[in-house]
Image (spheres, rainbow, N blue to C red):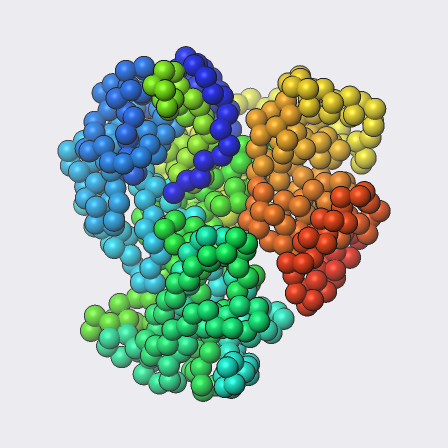
Length: 615
């Protein structure tokens, strides 16, 4: 499910205001030329599957959503309303339908109804059940059947947020003693330590899933040799908090953190015997009750565990932060879809588990901006409030809107995916597929040109590009702008934003402060994190320290105290010093073991000497 950012824009505003403020997403997707050519999605039917559309009637009565939306149930919650608004913003003349999904069979049944009864040309969903270790998933199987019978229908998903809490690796044992017994434990990471580290927020319940492969697998899915595998969770002192033992390749433990502070736990995968021919493990840590929402593992790899994006017939869409733009490149949202998507176990002929599925799928396919402002009725029933709709659940319908524009312009449906792939603007280090943003940011204009819908733009003569100054220094001007923004002067904020986007690292650092504090702009910790990252790479010491704080406390990014401490120490090594700084360093240092502190200090020296190495 998508996350909602901090609330902005409260009050009674006309519906047209939401369309104007949402147009930045349309600009980033470059749909204006298609609009000008008269292609606005007319005649294209888009089906939306989500949790609920509780406020549709009120939104339709106020012309925020069209009145002719076909409803196949209302469901619970508001996310369907928000998704339909995003599609409507991009393709205002498309027809819309909604169906409340849920469990895999229910979601597939919704898709079937939208195709058979509504004649949908595009299906977009954000339904992502708890991760499973079997491939293909029930949802993937159902969608595959629909694709065989309806190859002209486009299936997009904004589900699958799974970065962070995932590990896959070969079985590399190391001796370890637990509760007075000697085991062979899995080695995690380059440090060769026999455990991985898990952080569980206060009051949260965690689920740790372990998949193993131990050579031959007979019917029923249990390992034929090598003995049982045990998953043990301990605290830092070595006290066992939870454990499970099984001969079968699927293990699960649940644990609850009932304390008022982060629980720092260790995960051990142990066996009594060293031998494990062809062995490998996959480990996933998620927060119970929040779908695929990951928990932090200290050693993690990109990939997923059987979630909604493991079907090649689906186009998974990852969210990028529209406030982080820098010369056409944007940062992925911290919780955005990540790949490749890997199924863990396939079925065998006898109905059991056939070992790890070998294929991984290049999902997500592309990226789209989130944070479209969506309207919902105020609690008083009078007027509306506007919220930025964030996450892959907002990016998916934005991509569906672009697909509707292209279909309305008579692009062949079987070419839509290849057109968007070929013309996407790469967001990674180079062209080609990248784990966090797929083939790149969707470019509707370029896709329409490639499909011969629009004529290519004529080349324009441009003057030389001025390189940004290395220091960007004008201390008095910067101080005046910062004070003015703090007093609510949006003009000062716009001036800093222009300089930041032009590459001025000092302005980038100050803009991060504005977003963090809400001075002259809507408060947005994720945007603050993004701009401080850019400034830190340019060597701005204040930005390095601020970035360390965001990582340490998990503001605008997943909490990673070790990385945060390393960045704060790097700022100290570069000469930054002020009274609260030492207190903050002491507080973060208390969260880390002596060994973790040592490693953080090593990384700090690297970051201080070469800020470009900051991740």
